[in-house]
Image 1 (cartoon, rainbow, N blue to C red):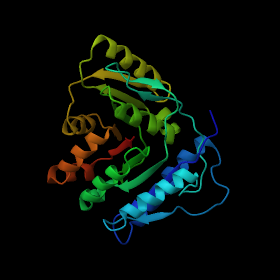
Image 2 (image 1 turned 120 degrees about the vertical axis):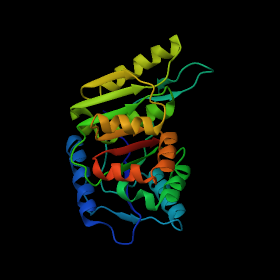
Image 3 (image 1 turned 135 degrees about the horizontal axis):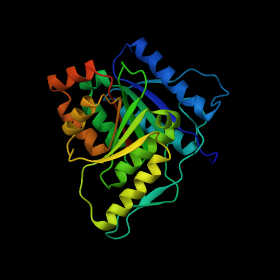
Length: 269
């Protein structure tokens, strides 16, 4: 494990008066993540809360980028850089793990409130491109990530998300009672070799990892599968998140999210 740069963590609030119970949930969640890495803060400051609006989002992201470049965390805490690989395309060949991945930070949003700010979240995703950030849409009913579902579609985006969660929260990834890596696509022989490599690497970071081929090609497919199997976390790609934002306003989805513990994590390269 290399002692590396710091990771920025911001809690984005999209309503004028944040839900205090959600803030306490986030603080406890982050504290649990710290325990696996060791003491992260010598400053003992409180978590910084950023009130996000359509008017200040560009400034918010600009601040994130500046702090990433200067290695000054939004949340006091020094994460150790435990993830090595990055990936690149070599012609038409499958993605390969190489070099060191760039992870600059995490933004946590209240999943139950995103229907109020879908446009804002879409803007966040666009502005954070090429910044190495992740977005955690945390369900306010969260207790523990007992069952994690990871989507692998052969893309660098899916690899990035899979790695990013275990980088930011190694204990939650490793101690999950069940983790299921789902591959919805049929691959060529060379791509299958990369798929096997991905599974092997992911199994080092996710406890009790299983692998399954299922044609779950849409967010709705993955969402319904996750509910049926009582999953607590879906690890998806940015395109999946965009699709999710397009359907989340439908009443049936909103009610299902409210009745279940499912959270969503997305890494943005």
